[in-house]
Image (cartoon, rainbow, N blue to C red; front, side):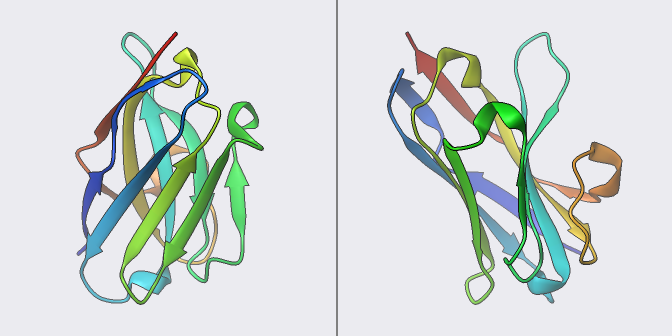
Length: 124
């Protein structure tokens, strides 16, 4: 069983930066791939980024490549999402998720554990 709690969201101007963090409880954190998803009002939840259990492999959706960086610290059971050059279209509820195993997934169903989310609002 894994419990996830996100933090770090807030209001920022376009061009600014935020760092989201996800703290995981439970054992064997490194045996889970971790992902970040976001959902804007009136839109479906979409994949943002994911990192393998070891931290050696990452994947990003095209719209955030070069601006967002996902990383994890298995000693602290945390996964971060550093977001730079934020745009108004990045405004959404950001949630972290955990998927057992070594593969990186970009779709919801593979992730069995979800946090409650943290709101990111980017003003123009």
